[in-house]
Length: 355
Ligand code: ATP
Image (cartoon, rainbow, N blue to C red; front, side, top):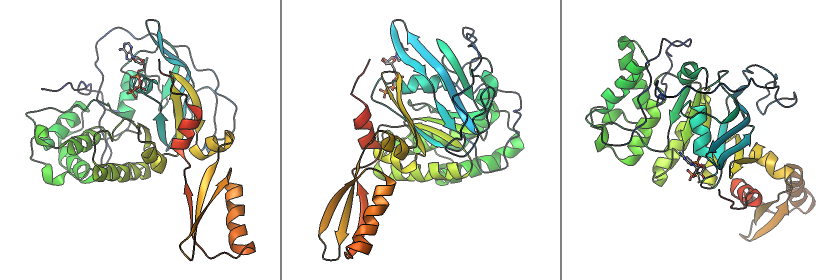
């Protein structure tokens, strides 16, 4: 190995979840099995008020709610005097594409490392797919696929061997490897590279292979730390499409990126962190409306001229469209929302505070 790579997955007993016959699964960059014992966090207190999740599931309080793929309560991580994560309460609905966004140093990677069982929290409680990463690391590793921000690939291995290596780490029967590898390579569009050396792949291809690796054991929850970094525009679009496919397959995807416009296209929910603190959480549109944010609507008329309008909610947007077409009878050819969304939201609620 020549690069800093995440440790290979820890061989695990056959998961309670049988290896999928479905296409692929991604791999987890498995955490080491050795190391200091992890402190036992307190049990989860009931989560905030009943109500329904964005996906219609019930918050059930204590215990795992299948509607919530990941929850943290009072999660705190200190590095000496530095509070990297400060009393973080995250709720990631099952099936969501959940964007974790924040400036450099906000605590995203630290949060991901804790969810992925790689880092011990200082205090607070965490549930990932119903298990506590600190005390039930093996169960969590069987249910998540973690793609760290630093790309981990192995040299002296061909693409096929690389995936087979991870399949063996997850104790997937050898007889299933051919179809598993076929499915994964097809999913990430690397079928033609099957016999290529891993270290000969372009960065975008390595990213895709890394994503395939996280799917080897068909995890429920994907944790992707800046998977699009360093990708060219085409590779970014392809990655976005791939994430859409994975969501359709029922995966919960937690993703960080600094490219907010990209997250906006795929995220059902976001959490905005700054200096370790959670500033907002929920569907982006709902947060924007809650904050009283506005968006700009650009209207193009039949003669090619454009007009901009400012609205504060979906209801106002609908009323505007009705007014222009029904009451004013304008020849509207385009009605487009511009200047809205995550970037505006992000600028509105962060102050560029970094620890
Ligand atoms: P970026 O967007 O730059 O990747 P991030 O949101 O992922 O940032 P983290 O890497 O989680 O942020 O870092 C959060 C804070 O914790 C930063 O102030 C960072 O310097 C600090 N930090 C992270 N890892 C360590 C460590 N091992 N020891 C000490 N401080 C650390």
